Image (cartoon, rainbow over all chains, first blue to last red; front, side, top):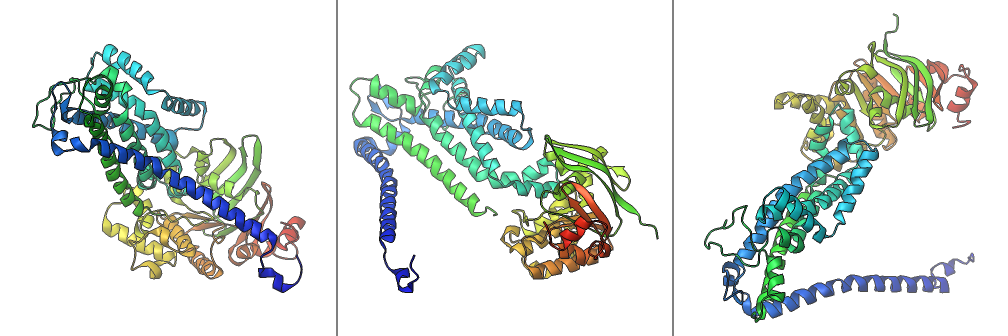
Length: 301
Length: 253
């Protein structure tokens, strides 16, 4: 660099090159960020457009009619709600509590590492394999038969490892200094967890569970073998038409059968079913995201 | 008056895995003295404090031999470790405001040991915040978050929390590392007042801080005691060890 002070703020070739690189990097990164919106808009837009003729309140509240060729999706919608909530009611408490143990109590030894490895691998098992396991374990061995309870437990097994892995991440993101400060004043591990660790990890834990809502609602394979059926007559006018040992319909399964198994379906019906499936998942997600924003605004550091 | 040993450490050795970091040190700390511990980084000062309140238990690879006695009883045989930790207040180098309200930060320890009555907690919170010279600044916003305070305020909050379980020993581990000189001087005033009520272990990298505050000063170097003498001797022209002279005069370390 020359000692001439006037050269300090002039554009040298090096500066121009640097600025050009900056512009290119920014452009590419921004374009990629914009690109991810595109598929979402296309999918949602296309679905809504094709589904429009069938999208009515009656479609939500009526059972299918005319051999599935007309009518609504009420039994499938309720079935999906049953399956999602029952499976998460099983997997969320077990997963969260197990993760708290593994992250806060268990020593870092070979057993802990084995469990961790098992969790990661279980999370990667394809859902059709979970389906076969559920068929063997719940339908036959436990004699639950093809039922809501078998299907829910299969979905629970499928979502459990992801919930564990995610909860551990959320817990690990709480700074260790908070725990040490609590231990220093004579707090037990449980007092520390309850007062400081869990309140600060809860929004991360919740995120993991939200993601599993959409997964449990969308998976077809695990429930196809264990409890979901092609068609089932349900009583209308009640919020709880199924019993736990019943088989049920589910939106994902219903969509599959409409699209591949039933001839001459009115064209808009499968699309409308997809919109309902997506809409109900989005509804749950929105509620949970709202809760998360609320909790995060109360986050304390 | 014969000095009354409050903490007795004899032949304490500590290793993490294969690496020994404290090599068999022995000394006594007297009741109601300010006991300075100086020494460069990696000399085992913090590990020593962690042995004392047994938070070393959270490092599974740590191995300890020798004994640490508080009031004559071996801390490693202490049945109720949480009781032991309540008898020892611990202030870490970096301020840690727990993500709770200022009130709850101070009331946390009493609550953990079963105090539930609001009136009792109010008394403790006010006493500790006053002792930590923080009361006047926060008395009108006790329900705002401890983590929103400035660094110096958070460190005084940390001290208030360490006092909230009425410890008989207060350990400060380089408490002034993250705070400004004015706040440091205020806390030093507080420590001089607290001496009548408790024994204070002051680990510090600021040699002059030990000189200002400590009754006796221990020079710890690479896990060994180089010298333990009244502070006036340690900082004199003729301490017992040449190394001490070099260290306190900034010739190394």
